[in-house]
Amino acid sequence: MRTIALLAAAAFAAGAWAQPAKEPAKPATQEAPKAEAPKTDAVAKSEPRKPRKINPRRQEDARHCLEKSTNTEIIKCAEAYL
Image 1 (cartoon, rainbow, N blue to C red):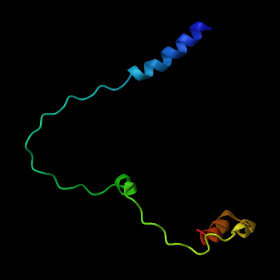
Image 2: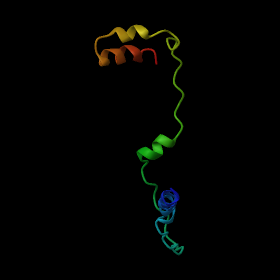
Image 3: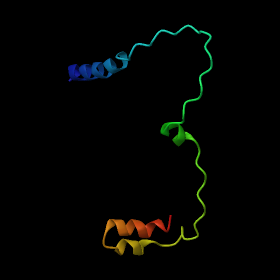
Image 4: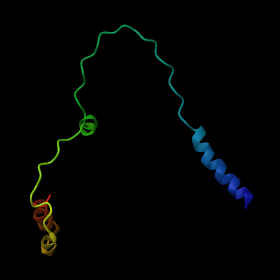
């Protein structure tokens, strides 16, 4: 039993030692400032979004939408309550 615990602990510890090596620091050189790159999706998603407009139907009951026959119809019906 102790050998199994020792092997399991060694397996978990091996992952910590298997970190990738760091690249050496590049010397600072005088370069012209580069133009800003266009925003990517990751950068655009990190920006705060505008708050949604308050919907007066938000607090109403939308359970009647569940009686629709297809998922698409249910979604379309329920979107009015978002």
